[in-house]
Image (cartoon, rainbow, N blue to C red; front, side, top):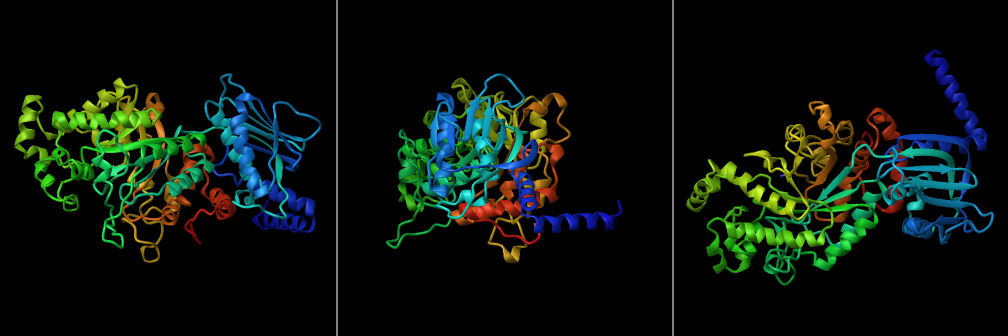
Length: 544
Ligand code: ACM
């Protein structure tokens, strides 16, 4: 067909759709089916719709009731009615059924099937996480106003008849937030988690500690928060002249972990060491290199005088392991991130005490001391049944046996580690640093530098070609970073995250073969209505 003829056919079809309401509805549904972000593995649309009304019944047995309750909850606000739930159909009413079938299948741990006919919606999965993701897809098949926080009038809650089979490409689909630089109040953090869940993102790394603040209560060392949480990056002061900061109590942490788990998100705690530890040294000056004298200063005068680097003497190692013991109790997830980045080990190389320690341990240089230190933490965490995660600097001087590498200075760290049989998460500055600018500097809020527009995130493939086929399984997935130096409000954090996190979600979840930026942008224009309804701030862009 010539281009001209092709265009004529499309125009005729469009005109028919405008004139014929049934066709228009069908076209709208076809459109909706491809507007799910991230794009499902397979979608088969057919004619007809399922309409959710107050008499629709949710069918859930004991093992699916928890997920059913989340669905009922999500629908109740905007619809203004709560659907009844029972183990079996009660009459001839239409049903939304959730079913677990634990037999092994391609759906694995997070996949699902979603079948919608005019009489019944059926979501099947092997595990509750799969049901949860099926529900997220179902929500996106409804009108965008389903994401409204308040009751919506005049909406017909229709879902197109459809058959979807879906499962993720990668199991680690992460974001990082940074309350160390600017504290993130509880409601903002919970809201951020909620928004991730809608996009099937499942890991939130929380950078709890850095030079600018210590944000997690540790019972054994109360000064970490009594002193170490009192500052932030902006060095803001209250009206009565005190610095402001903030921290999460252990009860807060339990609440965050539970809230995330309800949304099938694992919180990955990051406790930075041996560098980025300034706040800990401010609180306990004996942890640093020649910083013992800081104890004589009032705490407010200790900030900025620590080099941010601990001295890995045995007492410091024990201190940090005690911290990790409490962290392990709070976070059930397998991975514990200990940072490990950007340490200027030259400070150790020039220090007499550290030189003596290297000699005692038969280490040839300060890189090996860094590696020795990381190994102490790796052995400790492994003995407790956990896995150490660190930024790719932990490769220097020899990688600890159980370590997972987060590759941020490009892909090479991830390639090297995966080919050596270590698990890796790809998080390169080239594509996943969401604290970088996403548009022209002049028209954007101040950012840390760099330029990562939406298209650049989307073009990234988390599986570098240099990884040998037998080691592909070691690439757990991908994570984007929202470092907090310039991000001090929830609205700004959302702005930096969205829409880039949608591109991230798609490259982490959807099949590589289905990748298509034009299709993604078309889906995005519809999806933004969902973000509007949900109150998520995002960068509005004319040319994404
Ligand atoms: C990092 O950005 N320093 C991991």
